[in-house]
Length: 272
Ligand code: KIV
Image 1 (cartoon, rainbow, N blue to C red):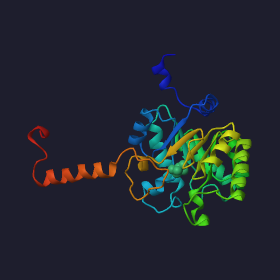
Image 2 (image 1 turned 90 degrees about the vertical axis):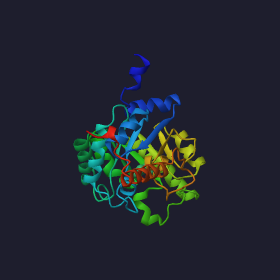
Image 3 (image 1 turned 180 degrees about the vertical axis):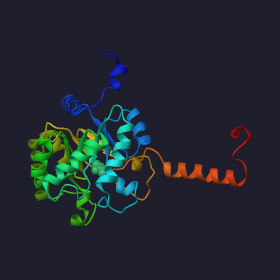
Image 4 (image 1 turned 45 degrees about the vertical axis):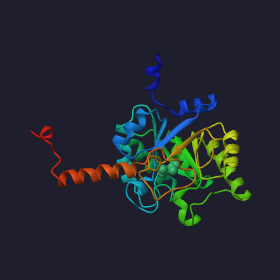
């Protein structure tokens, strides 16, 4: 197979497992719409997460809690249409899986059927045992999410680093092993000490993707709007901004307004 053909081969959960075994780092980013997903996919990002962070960066809510299953499916189907290579993972939103395992399975099936996504992600460890069994038993691949789990923000009370104390670190390690044993294909670790994240990644055979979890894990994920500098109010230490799009987009729009007011747009060449 030629190198260029290999680039367009769809990433699967098996590919990710092989990448971990080979020591190849996994790049993951969020996307919520067709146009951005196309760009992210063309840049060879391995996993596109349709995160419930859409609740923050797209809908402007303070937390991830308000976004609904229907809204996640809408975002996910647009992302799937923009993607040729990446594995598409979709968050089960708050309230769509916590009440009982049958509802959790129904929610996961709706995402897979109605959006065409490849896998789902859900937050938490042993408390999801029954739901995991049902969802995985239906053949739906699941990515876990431990550490700072934003759907539990009102229980934590703050977005600070998790599992700094030994008791919480031990619980996180046993939850991570539990998720692997249940059959999850990968795990996100959010905002935990780098040494703990490395210990977990070294102990597991499934890939561990970090956000604010240091470089000792198997891959990294960031929220697209944060790393492109479209959001400005959120500046945690782990966030590297690769662009300053807030300023650039704002500048372009300001120029457009000035051009319209001054009748500098459209020009003769821009009309019929
Ligand atoms: O919703 C999201 O964007 C996420 C990432 C921060 C991992 O869960």
